[in-house]
Length: 306
Image (cartoon, rainbow, N blue to C red):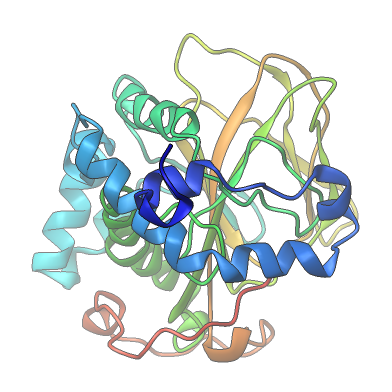
């Protein structure tokens, strides 16, 4: 029988004794210690897994992002003066909230198949437990212990943040410039009788991007987002396959209970160094197009909201 020391990273990761749900909910000290102590082992395990797991479909944005959005984004990176063509795709659904098609509904299957393989990998992933513990979710950003460190996913994740989310956010909310250099992300899934909803809350972000990963043949009922309107009413938005909602982090919102089916989403945040966010009551700031369409060169910090 092999000794523990002779096992490969992948085998070692699969053999880890993951903290139980009750300890996670209590935020027991041993839970954080588990993820911290095994951080490098898990990163190495994901690299080893991906080298040995046949990844049949590319995870490049070129393969799964909505064609109309992708072409306008790429053209605007070449010429930022054309950014208005991107804004035309964004529909305002509530103050500080916009909806648009992000992924091609027919091509989401490529990402979902990859994530299915991730789930079957038996490598421990830390679920998000900032507001509630979502059993089927995972941490995505390298600031978070136990994150999905598979290289091809991290490449896709960074492309979404740098080439799509940040310039769109700056186009809609120019006051976030300088408060959008740091990133955070997690996946989340709602199911009846399990994780069904999230109460009204605001995010610790400058901007939040919420992308639905349901396939066209995966209907669900309920699980709409309610966005609080300053007039006291809520504006309700339902997710469609591949659709995204982008909003200021200080906009109060809630996920209503899901009553049938499942809803799977990626949730991405931008904020400033040491988790700073802008004052939203400042006057509109003057930002040139070429400033919006640029990737920050600062070092990434290690401040994660949860």
